[in-house]
Length: 409
Image (cartoon, rainbow, N blue to C red):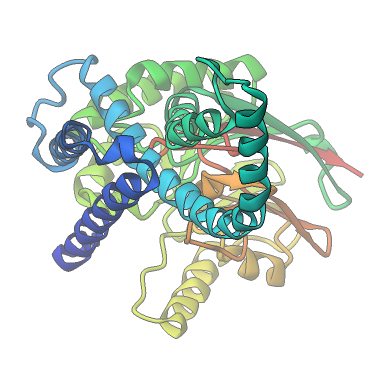
């Protein structure tokens, strides 16, 4: 069964973007007279139009053989910088507009005082000459304000797409078999190999994994978005499998369904990568890995029912005294894992919120388990911020590769 955004949903997104850009142009023109000039307004709409064309081409109309070249990635960067900059600009200018309303009231109180000062200057014969007055300075400063959000979005798009951090966790469990003390699991998630995560970036990530010498690698879904890169991705993972003592394990994400899960499943089944689809596998003495499918459902009740069924299938047959690690794309499975006493569950899907200020995601999508480590009755659940993304904008939430070292204690 295939899942993906409907035509209606894409149309709604397109209309929202149109509304944002239209509102941005209107507010920009009212913010300062310099932006009301016809040439400036035409340039605004010309850049916006090019941005839309680039984004449509990059998402839906690109050639079957992939992008025409790496150089096109920089046009995509520019498009996202412009679009996200407009969104940030709207927030800033709307806030600035409110501030200016209050400032206007204060200005009225000062008008009489300024009039008296100007009269005094005229009476003493003093002149301001060609110097910059305070009013002129403030007008110039106000005109520059809209540029600030675009600098912010440039940092979020370019820096967010290139920075990858390593997170290491030493996790102590009293029930861990002595033979597993020091066993290390690496996790990558949400690479979304395609527009912003090419084979060069995959090589970089695998080199980061290899440097830490983990025992196995867990891939928690959303591996490939551009299916033209599926074959080289599987070839590279197949070669990398040999460099890990216990191999690579994989669970489904939602984007596998958005693309072509049958094709992806075939490619994985032909590789040595172990796919855990509501199933489990003994890794070594005392250690099991279980993996669950992505729980699609039309409402909360159906989602909860699927999660329970998938989790039960994945755990069925694992001896009670075996140490188990759950691989899941959606972090809502943490509720099932915590209730069943599963020592460790690792997930992805949320991208950590991607735009985070003060520990809180500014994006409208929220999850119960959003980012980082959670603990319940000595059970742990970790949500990766993702190793890649399908939207190149990260602020306060860098992409990551995670490592979990199991310890007895």
